[in-house]
Image 1 (cartoon, rainbow, N blue to C red):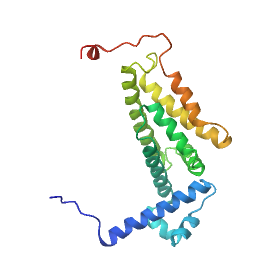
Image 2 (image 1 turned 120 degrees about the vertical axis):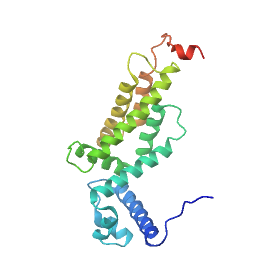
Image 3 (image 1 turned 135 degrees about the vertical axis):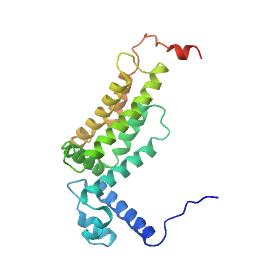
Image 4 (image 1 turned 90 degrees about the vertical axis):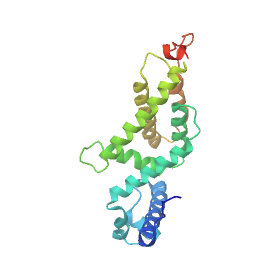
Length: 208
């Protein structure tokens, strides 16, 4: 018999209100980006004061980070059935191209977070470490199958793939004609073994 219980009473209402605010914030920032959006606009959409909105998130920065976390979650859903890290990143940037305001928010906030005192510093540090480790694991598996070149480490390929994707987002904001997904695919092809190279098979794989 399960002992888990659904939130009740004021706590449940608080969670629902928080989700409502987050949905409104996603819409507002998707439309206007970081510089073209305001806390007042979010508050107006949910029928609260600006102070009322912050009551559920603590600060504007915490609200922005919640928006970016939700953006990442949606991106994960869009790449769930990808068969390689490179394909997943290509799908993610294609998905992001439909949300220019959120791309603007991500680029602006990630740049500001390079300051160790910025409220978003820990969020982005942990995000990049986790994302790099995830991609590195996928690259290692692909290399064992002979699908990734061996003269560059999986960790290096992981960091480079992330740098390509994030750098393209900035360039795309400046020039929307850039096809981010296509350029990520170009990088993915560069990660494959040179033509005619025989992939080495680890001894542990060769014996079973």
